[in-house]
Length: 97
Image (cartoon, rainbow, N blue to C red; front, top):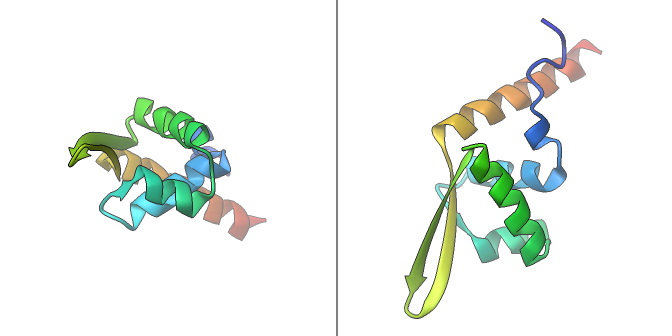
């Protein structure tokens, strides 16, 4: 098995890496908090969360708080497994070079 076999292309982008890192240590995070933590635009965040949702790595829940829409994100079991494998692959790469 090669050193980079478990490196996941979906996590290559720093914003997606950031989203997953935040969600791995929080039960859920809402859109505005993610945007604030990552310092990205609405469109940029929406695009990257959609990519992660399409890969079934995160779950998106939309609801209303009063009359305001609220979007919450959480990591799925598959997302947790894939992200851990990705981080382990990066650690192995660093430790073997």
